[in-house]
Structure formats: C-alpha cells, structure tokens
Image 1 (cartoon, chains in turn purple, orange, blue):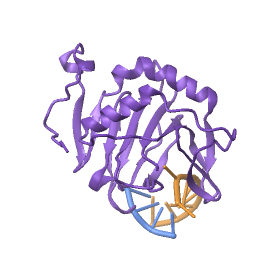
Image 2 (cartoon, rainbow, N blue to C red; image 1 turned 90 degrees about the vertical axis):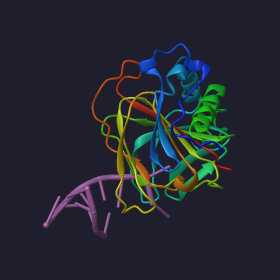
Image 3 (cartoon, rainbow, N blue to C red; image 1 turned 90 degrees about the horizontal axis):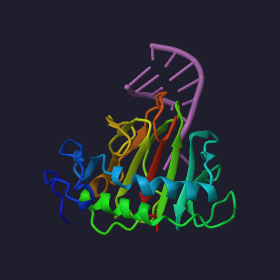
Image 4 (cartoon, rainbow, N blue to C red; image 1 turned 135 degrees about the vertical axis):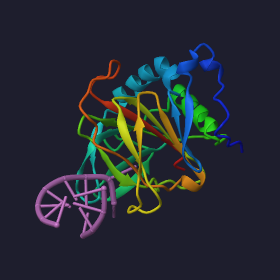
Length: 226
DNA sequence: AAGTAGCA
DNA sequence: GGCC
C-alpha cells in the first residue's frame, strides 16, 4: 500500500486548477492526514445529490444513551445508517423515522470518498455508510471513537463543507491531549490503520455565514460499517 | 455510548 | 482546560 506523504496529489480533476489552489496533504498522524481543498472539484455534483438524500431522509436530532439530545442533527445514506437513542448506538438498514431503507449512497459521494482514501494511502476503500452531520453555530461533537463498525480494517473519511470548524484529533484514551486541526470548506480528514480508533471531536462552531451553505457546517463521515 | 453544569 |  502506498503511503508517501511527500508525493503531490495528482488527479486529472485538478489539472486546470491554479498552482496555489492545488490540494495539499498534511499529516496529522502516522496514518492520518488532512487533504486540503480535496472536495472542491466535486461540489457541483455533491450538493444536488445531498439535497436529494435529505429530501428522503431529513436531518433530525438524536438522543444519546445517557439521555442527552445531540446538538448536531444527523441523517445517513448508504446500506447502513448510524443512529443513537436511549438503547444505544447502532447501524441500521432502515431509517427509524420512516421505516424505509436509507437513501442509496449517491455515486459522487462514493467516488469522492474512495478518491480521498486512495490519496491518503488506503486503496480500495468501499464505504457502505455515510453519516451526514449538520452543525449550526454552537453545535459540537465531544471526543469519541468510531467503534460500532464490524471491522476496523477500513479507514474513516470525513468531508467538511460550509462554516469552518476546529477538529480535535486525540489519542487512544479520552484523557490524551488532542491536536487542534482547523478545517475549512472542502477539506477532508482521513484516518485509519494504526490511527483508526483515535478519539476525535469538534469544538463548538462559531457564528458565521458561508456563501454556498449559509449558517451551517455539513460533514460527511464515510465508513465501512459491515 | 457521540453530554452538560459547575467548580477550580 | 480538566474533572464528573
């Protein structure tokens, strides 16, 4: 498996992009990186596909097993959708709110996630789940691990759109000190391999307005759940 | 268990 | 920011 943080990102998609606008890879861990601006060329296809998914599976706030309502509103697409309620965290084939299967993962979602994983050194990523998170100003995600998946062999691919955020990238215990990673519209974080179970979270989103997405941050988290 | 408040 |  190729994992060369120094090699430039070379995709036909970026051939016409100005040199100073070329995406850049920044390592944040042994097998973790941020791909700056990587999602930007997909946006024209990504946003209409997002609208279609949300029409079928609207954002809703969920309750944690501890009984607290999350500040982030969630939806999902793909074979499996992540949900939480008083009984616990789980992946389900159907949206509990409609009883219907989660919307199919749009091709453009899959292509972007697979391309990002490949750029980060993880070949043949086949996500079967995309959790869609909406953060309004003040919304946050406290430190947690993604550990409801059946296998940890596949990486996590996290796409940021809209308002900026500070991503917390921690260690293997909640008490370990976290790195603070600023994330902008179009940035993608990928972590896997030895870093797959690292704690992570998001600081409260600051007030602001994004020209394309308005007063919100949208995050896609791609995973292989099964 | 992906949460908050209160206190240092 | 860290503890519970």
